[in-house]
Image (cartoon, rainbow over all chains, first blue to last red; front, side, top):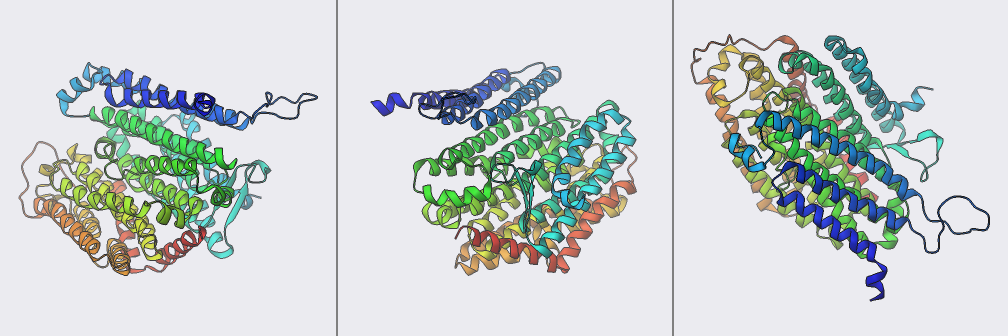
Amino acid sequence: MNTFLGLYNYWIVIVLMMTGFYIVIAQGNLIKKVVGLNIFQTSVIILYVSMGKVKDGAAPILTDGIEIYSNPLPHVLMLTAIVVGVATTALALALIVRIYEDYGSIEEDDIHKQDGSF
Amino acid sequence: MISDNLPALQVVLPLIAAPLCLIIHRPKLVWLFALFICLISLGISIELLSAVINTGPISYEMGDWAPPWGIEYRVDKISGFVLLIVSMIGAVVMLYAGKSIEHEIAPHKQTLFYSAYLLCLTGLLGIVITGDAFNIFVFLEISSLSTYTLVSLGKDRRALTAAFQYLIMGTLGATFILIGIGLMYMMTGTLNILDLAQRIPEVLETRTIRAAFAFLTVGICLKLALFPLHLWLPNSYAYAPSSASAFLSATATKVAIYVLLRFVFTIFGVTFAFEIMPMGTVLMLMAIPAILIGSTVAIFQQNIKRMLAYSSVAQIGYMILGISFASVTGLTSGILHLFNHALMKGGLFLALGGIAYHMGAARIEHFKGLGQIMPWTMAAIVVGGLSLIGVPLTVGFISKWYLVLAALEQGYWPIAVVVLVGSLLAVIYMWKLVEAAYFNNVEPSEVVVKEAPLQLLIPTWLLIGASIYFGINTDLTIGVAQQAAEMLMGAGQ
């Protein structure tokens, strides 16, 4: 029970990851797919941030009288990952705008019916 | 001074040049500028590879921060070899792009094409040269995002949906890789590849490392389009602009294979991957259907770019098959095919671009009688096709020869048969083109069709010529591939 509760942030990671993954696969709407992709990526951010936590560690800002600090590196890595995620989302949305202009729809089935793509 | 900083310049130069393209703005000038940058990149990678061959691996400390704390750029035999492949294809295709892009893309978007192309080059070179696992992810995303842009610039509206599909699958793959890297960091506290290789053995027997291994393998296989994770590839290559298809088919999947080699052999080691985990069986079970199904589906394609894309799926199968043997000969054949396939598939896609230049597309019906009208372009396609099949005196023969040798060495003769069947299927789909081009009369059409312009023919023949040259003079390629394979096999033991 203790390990179950003690690892609760990892459970959240798994639930979020699978939710996002499922949305990407199951939804036919392109915007919803992008939303799913974002949830999927966010779960990885939580995974990294969780692993940076050191038991009894303080925030990694030098202060007198504190010996143990949490590891700041995963947070820094995730700043990069967030930037990548934002760029991906922006590009995906831009593509959706263009797809809507050309096909008049953002539903996978409608687009597939028009010329067999997807 | 400059020669000390070559590893950094290899990546930084195209990175800085990409936004400069937007400032220069005039398409013709931008092209000249981008071509100049690509040629310098090629020069740098030749210099780096010869330095590595003469004096051993180069380690470069980014910003003077010593590894494993700082980011290390590391060039050894295999990364030097892949750098050379990427920058060489980059330069040749850029030479081609000037004329081809002018024809295929609206004027106000041409500058953006060159910008995205240089960014993609940056990302691919960065993945290969960096010695830092997280850095690989960052460069992977730089190259992927610019690849999606390149694909979406295609004329057909299906280019957009292809790019979107690629974006979804590519991002899933990259995120899987990110999870894998995170799990490795969790157990070892380091991101430097060499440092990881030293620390992983202590924690090898944990579920976290096994999960990391699984995530990395699936993520990378998505990126390198291993069957059945190849679904993004055919449409992306079919509808991207000609020069983008040639560049991507010759470099992007190759770099992903390099990443696979790096993670599996350098970090996890042969023993863990192939004895404790069933990596060999899994790769083999995916590579064989890739070869057979990829080649069979290629036969039925009417759009020839799509046909070549499916043939790429099959060729990736050959490379992975070589790797799955986990022997020096097998790896040599995989690395050789990486180089050889880049030459022939790059050349073939460039030749198709030459046909699409006048025809507007490259479908099978456009090939009727082309043997007379476009003798040089068709000759390039025939030579490239012979190489895909694996006829002696072409590069395709060399790598298939090693692949069959590797299979027989392990006593897997049915696999040697699979390789031969794959070649026969390649004969069928290439014959379709030859038959249409040489045994049919020209159909009267309104479009004036003539030989492709010289600016397209020269780069095409550079690659096709190289695929003959390296099929005859194999010292350099086999030498480097063999040494790289020995290094990889020795790394994990």
